[in-house]
Image 1: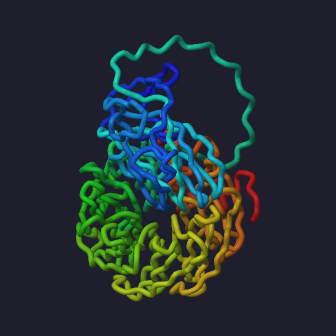
Image 2: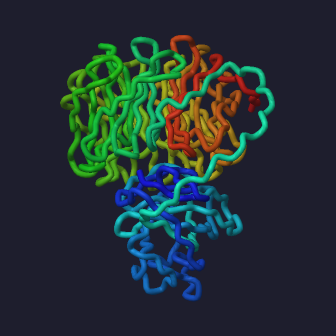
Image 3: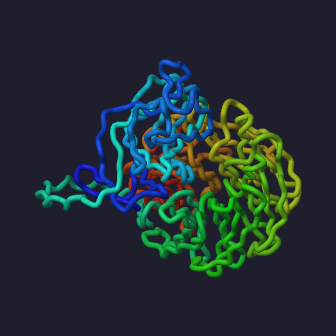
Length: 542
């Protein structure tokens, strides 16, 4: 990564809100250049206001691409040279129609999945400072999660390469000692991988040795990484860059095979393929890597589970066709698979999650983008070549960040995000095929429920990890009954902006283990709860 100078201090990476992201063309060192504030982008259609290449709002789940370099748009008064690697902005959301957020990122990298500006429907325009890194051609992307929103971007400076960064000043005097800490809450939080900007798209399982093992994306190097914890609390881990060929490792999912070795599904963004890494040892220091589906642009939103025959089954999205697809591996190493387009009705198949039912057949939760619904596909055979498809929740814009598990009653239960209301919801299926469900808004305090992950706790009740967007916290919801109609809500990590990309598993000691992203520092973090319900901080019942 490059260096940015802020307040006389060189810091690693390129700042984007609170997220460190590096553009592909970023220089080794950069210095900030202040300019007279100017309007670069105004997407409002009024000719008296419109500036830039777009004159309409950005739609829900849409990425709009703009260019910052001088001369790219004759309407803009901004003079930003082609040497600029990032711009310092005030970014404003105007007339949002739904609760949502914007993500600002370079034009040549994948969406990091972070929020730079949050808003609610009808909110008055509120400026938010954000440094936006640029691709080498000056392009950058603006992603809008939900509803429609106009965007105004004013620039007050830019970063460009420099070879004359001054030495840091002398160290100041030490401050007074802080107050004594409080009583130990019983849970542990560890920064497991701090090398660069890591920890995106986590997936967690408990290994054959009883220690957690985590797959995730290293966005600094565009690699698939694995962290094999050396103890149940995951205070240390063996870190392995498992696949470094091109831009690989987003959309990861991990499961432990019958041989005790992990298998990981993920996306090859360079080639637009679905890939699988079948680890050759329990801590995954090496793997057999297979490009499993190379038919067009595929392999996002992957989820993996091990079938009753010991072979993995993977759900994922076919971007080119807007379909939900399934790859049923024909052997434990998943060197080949039966590929089935399972749902091709409209634009579907994002946010997939898969679990194997008591009958040995997979069940998949996913999002119907076209209708904004939560859908479920209950496969009618172990290879999932056919399924019963149900639109389970159709109230508003729902179904993002789904996660599915099989309850103690053999019925699936799903956690997901209600984008219309900014809530965490659960759908407890009333039968194994999940043709109907009990729908519960489980946490409605602010904008909550992104990046959900669900598993069954030691008490046979579900437990969910998720992100509190309003406060930038990692939260858990420990359900008080199998249908999860109520839960004990706990803010588990509140240090900075944490809790994006969560994944949860229950350790051999019955304590939940959660992997997630520390967005401020770009680190992989792991929280191990102090008890089976994660209620070691003061929570509240809902």
